[in-house]
Length: 639
Ligand code: X8Z
Ligand code: ZN
Image 1 (tube, rainbow, N blue to C red):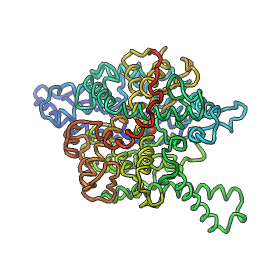
Image 2: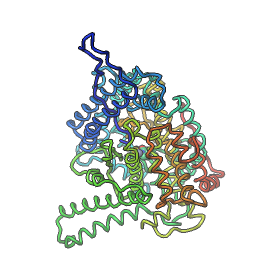
Image 3: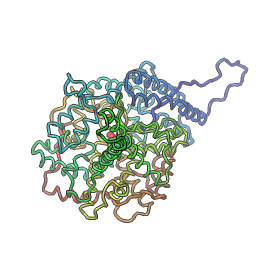
Image 4: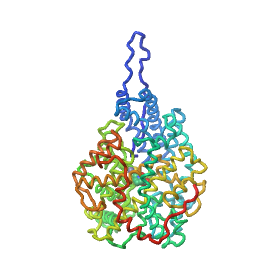
């Protein structure tokens, strides 16, 4: 939850009902008064909704779903009431008021029908979908319910690209994709209902509403996203080619499918982060050790060993006591990792996290119930009660995800004094880019400074290794960041019919990512539903935009910090000027068009992929050389 969920309580305007003919006609509410009332009403009811959603995500059962759905019903009904009232202020002239009025229409990603029965149905579906994803498990043996695997366990299998066989990886990948089969019908209905809501709000469909949040027309935005993809695509194609040929070296002809990468071989359920392929793709073996997984696991083990020693040694402890200490070590390790991330932000001059953050966040997976493990950051109210919800394990991906989540948290803290409607990112890609900009600053030098890796090697080979590590997270992600909403835009506008949901999903994965399933995935599956943001209804183009923006922000902050030399070497940790400029940008929230906010930080009004290319220039040249004479490109099946 990085954008709050919508809010509402249908307060009808008191337009003088019951007053005598002689009584003075009451003044109609001015646009500014209306906006002020909307801001206050949203703020007042907000906490109730977030508490209900928090419970539903951290304590999955039918009761919490019911409460979440009821809270959503109330808030969406209030929103719909305000939307009706807002119509009288159409064409309002004052820029900030007109902006606030438009933001009311964009304040939910789930436009709800005016009809109360349909609205109720929608909130029930969305709670059910969220719970189904969070509690999703693959049960290899129906007779052994205790042997079911959750997403964490399945992800661990998939990431073990060295230890597991081709078949084991495939089984785990297919296993996870069983969880979404039952979601298909609900999702189809969800599309119909939100489309009705979107049309009532004056949008062509839900996708059109989503594309309207960028201070430009939806059509221009679509074109803009194509343009940005065009800038970075050649870099992705080089990486895809290199990875594919390495997979062919390892697995023979099974390592590719018409030039595409088999979906279960990238170490990630959705092929969005290829970090787990490091052992296969590391350019220069062992040059500049960047074994962050090993370092974090060792720290966790040291915490456990100390707890055991303090308790008198393992031989004195029962199995139950040892399990409790394992648990304690998990939590201490997660807190220590979070503190390291917090230190980056406070080192830039930002405030320490409130005590309530550590008291109320969910940092590790509870043992006794189902929760949504997918990481998220929460503004519980509109005045600084912030939390994250994660199931942290001591590994690199989780470590960088904490920095990502704290980016959301610091955005919430920075804009908390804005009116409710402006308490948001300049656009949603900004929100996603804040923490990731910091992740770009986690150079080998930075990682060494916090005691995670040895003193960095200085050589061309070390540069390529460090760049590859970043590219497997960032470049591999880019086409994935785009394709999810290419699919949903098509689903919402009807160009992808329900009977083609899965076919269209895989043809977009082929087109953008150059990825294919090992076996045909017919319409008996609903593979889109196996990705959190689809049942969770979080728009996804934001992450693609973020992967462009974060390099622009990084460059701007590096410049502000006085960095000289190649962009990829910049680490702005501890730099007060970079911190001051970043915090100033965050504080603006959504109070002005994003182009203005962008200009204040970077000097430019456009999103632009050239900082990505500047950053990865050494790797792109290296990849091009490696791929010389190799078979590149792929044949995507007909759409
Ligand atoms: O969902 C997330 C964050 C929460 S906003 C953990 N991300 C996307 C994903 O995991 O699919 C971050 C990168 C992409
Ligand atoms: Zn995020």
